[in-house]
Amino acid sequence: MPEKLAKGFAGAEEDETFELKREGSSVNVPQEKQLRLEISEARTGKILLRRHAEMGALTGNPVLDFFQKANRYLVSHSKVKIRDRATVFRLLAVMLNAGLPLIKSLDTLGNQQQKNVKLSNILFGLARRIESGKSLSEAMLEHLDVFDEAQIGVIKAGEASGQLNKTLKSLADEIEKSASVQGKIKGALIYPMVIMSMLIGVIFLMMIMVVPQMTQLFIQNGQTLPLPTKILVAISDFSVNYWPIIIISVVGLVFAIGAWKKTRTGKYLWDAMILKLPIFGPIMQKGALSKFARSFSNMMSSGVPIIKSIEIVAHAVGNEVYKRRLLLTAEDMKRGIPMAENMSESNLFPKILVNMIEVGEQTAQLETVVLKVADFYDEEIDEVVKSLTKIMEPLILAIIGVTVGGLVAAIMLPIIQLTNVAGTT
View 1 (tube, helix red, strand yellow):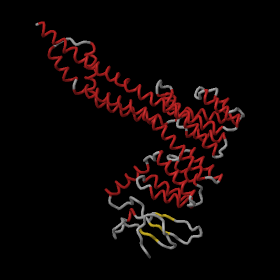
View 2: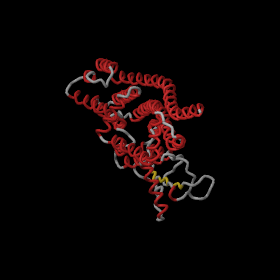
View 3: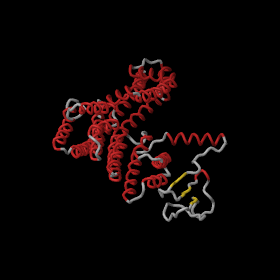
View 4: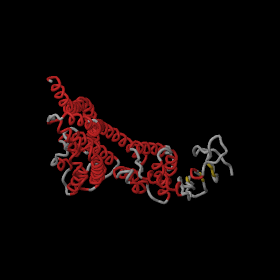
């Protein structure tokens, strides 16, 4: 049986098996990394890409097996980036448009995802489930941690209409746009959080390393300390004596908040609190509305009924407050209440959005109008983020200046008093 260097699927002939080898070498690839391409005379004539040896197979060595299991755990719990999903949808649309079968397209994409093991395994798994008779949308339901309900709903509509390639392309455009918006929002939030975290860390180190040394000097001279210095010394003494408890408490609080946010009530209250923040709340609201409008428009244009579209998008909007409100909207629409009329009763939906939806309902161009609303909110987010960046820099500098100035004043006041006493004597 002939053996060739395998870089792809071109030139494959029936009943040939290709063993993967390192290019320019006669040494076989290790068994755990070996792939075999088998082309059989099955009636379907499809290419079957199989992994005969699973990557990271157990060896019997306890130490190696431990690391293999740890690697599997990390891979299974890793995240697939939004842009990676968009790239997969776009390439899959290109392959289907070129006439490649769906299973072969998924296998090809899975073979190309060498740097993202989890995504590669998911793509191979989708191909195998489709071989067993499932549709793409049904196979994706087993990976709800990677593909949300809105994406699966759009793909299901594309399968029903026979326009899967066009649906995948529009889905890729939507995901890339949403990723861009989320990136801008995260960028606006991360900068002040990092600066404030560093400031707190520096202050904590000063409390346990610098202030105690100064305190000893003040005690030796037996002078009466000013009130700011007394407060600083008290905080320093507490930090020095109980720093393990402080660190454990902070870490425990972070994990407790994280666990609380995963509960239904906790997620709702957290999202409600975020929306009410004075500066970042409006940005988060615009981001949620942009996500809703763009996903809703995509589902409507794919042929999904309006009420079903709202129900699916509600679970994918990323905010529990909007999720519950949109589900109520869908229930009211089932009773005959128009969408715009229902949304006008809530302050979660600005008047401009309600008015545009009302125009879309009256002109039967709802998906087009809502898409324009999404573009409008994307531009709003761009402007807000740019303005916020300009405002945050001087604001953060002012906070740092006041904090550092207060520390310096609390430390220098006793020193100045000591100098004055020495000068009078």
